[in-house]
Image 1 (cartoon, rainbow, N blue to C red):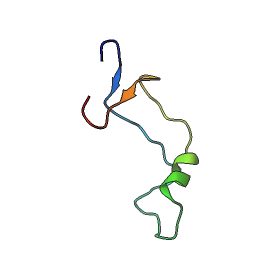
Image 2: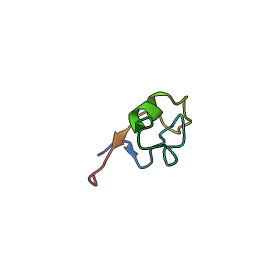
Image 3: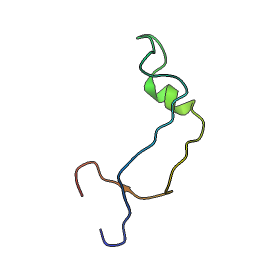
Length: 52
């Protein structure tokens, strides 16, 4: 840990509303790839899924 920056929040942009998408509509990966840029507070760090 030391000088590591632990990321506690992720922002994921989507190009459409994923909840109203039809079953045969675009997949989540496609919605993410088609999104524009998002705002964020830091540009790098460690994403700790398990509880660092």
